[in-house]
Amino acid sequence: MKKIANLFVVALFAGAITLGSYKLFFEKENNKWVTSEQETPFVTTSNLYTSARGAGINEVDFTLAAEKTVNSVVHVKNMTISKGGPSSIAEFFYGYERQQTPQVGTGSGVIISPDGYIVTNNHVIANSSQLEVTLNNNKTYEAEVIGTDADTDIALLKIDADDALPYLAFGDSDNAKIGEWVLAVGNPFNLTSTVTAGIVSAKARSLSARRTQSFIQTDAAVNPGNSGGALVNTNGDLIGINTAITSQTGSYVGYAFAVPSNIAKKVVEDIMEFGNVQKGLLGISAANTKSQAAIEMGLDQLEGVYIAGVEEESGADDAGLMEGDVIKKIDNIDIQKFSELTGYLSAKRPGDVVELTLDRDGKSFVKNVTLKKQNSVILPATSFRVKNLTKEDIKKFGVSKGVKITDVPQGYGRYDLKNKVIIEVDGNKIGDIDDAKKYFGEISRYGRTSFTMINEDGEKEHMILQ
Image 1: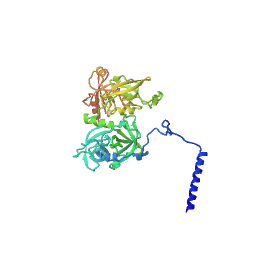
Image 2: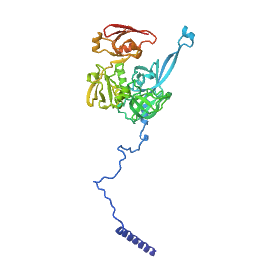
Image 3: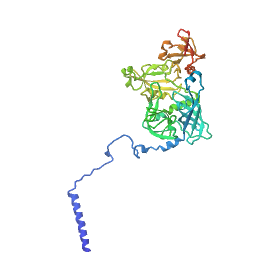
Image 4: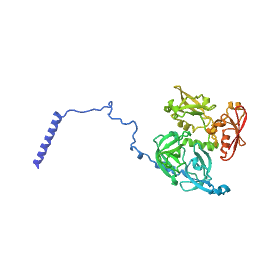
């Protein structure tokens, strides 16, 4: 035992002597000191913050927004009465009793107040003879139409419930970001309380050259029956009313569109306060940047809105805007296309003041423009474009009331109607564009309509349309 202990001590000393010799005679000094004045070396791969939880959809919690939304989205059933036509030649010539066939259309709606106000699409409730609203708890109510606006495709309904209802507050759609997660909630194909997720694909999207409305585009799945439902962010804020899809099949293919909440909110407030929508207009027309003439002028490469015309006695006219000016900003918001401008103005009223940053001949300047009421309209039935009379018109034509024809469809070109003032339609006096729109809307396609005009010489002219 003593012998083993001696061997262990000898081995220990031999190892220590060997290690010490190596460190002293063979190992080279290779120390690197880092002081507080030196930077720790690293490689920058991105200037974006990295989440501690990682990246991707797993970061986002949709459950709270979904739970908050499904109870505020309702199922809207629209019953209309279809009148059938004659079923035989004999019935056509000798008369027949029209059969009334009930038809039911469905859509969605969003409760926006605890006392039962509901916003939906105008096309969901159009031509209804009876409206039925079913809540997420399966309670059913008959709904009343408070008001509609076909231009924005927004309608306001009201139901009377005994208890306060769950509702969604309007969010600020201007703050929605491209790439932000959103949920679409509605009743596609009569499947109640369906939630789908996607992102904001684009903003201020225009669907038609003839319409100036701008939409939020999303890739959240939207199908027939979703119309009028909610588009919400992950906080459960209502940022849009789902309205349309673009599809060759009629079903979702990756594109869906919603009316921005700022526009829907303004329409609802106008209907509740005034009974109709108060549109604050700038009073300009924009160049069609896709036309051959615009392309030759380089306008298709332009960032901003090129003013092609200024309406007389409009806010733009009063502020000194001119043809050829380019609108670059409105209230410090960059404008790159016409739909962005009209989308922003859709949330404004007559009397509101907007600040425009313009470019004229390469020089930038700012103008404050007071928006005015709509001054022109395209009439139903005839598609005449008419405008309210200016002070100049009143003096020239010798009338104080009426509407001036500024444009007519090609089929009416031979009648020399432009620049004449309509003062009466089927015995109804025309005071302004609201009267004209109302009475021309009552014209029957199969009846006979007469209207009275004043020409530039102050003479009365009568015309009959059949």
